[in-house]
Amino acid sequence: MIIARVIGTLVSTQKDAKLTGAKFQICMPVSATTQQPDGKPLVAIDSVGAGVGELVLICAGSSARQTSKTNNTPTDATI
Image (cartoon, one colour):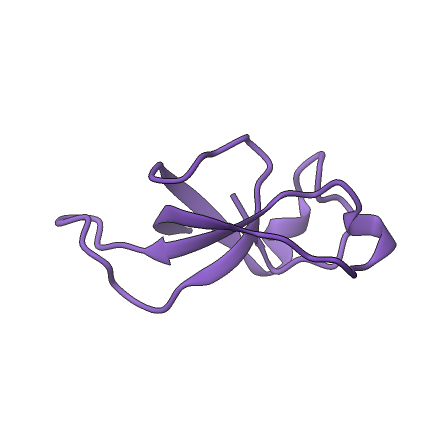
């Protein structure tokens, strides 16, 4: 799990058909103790309706495909 802050939204004009309707968020990992940026930004599929500025938990790898919105989709990171 990664603690991150949503810093923007990403729009994709072409993507896998299984990702149609998915909302992509740009997230900046943050330190758990200071909430200061800690790493490089990443793109995650938003499965909870998070907005810019919110702190979120991101699951990555095969766990990212275990939500109702991302089941059997080609994703590596999910909020």
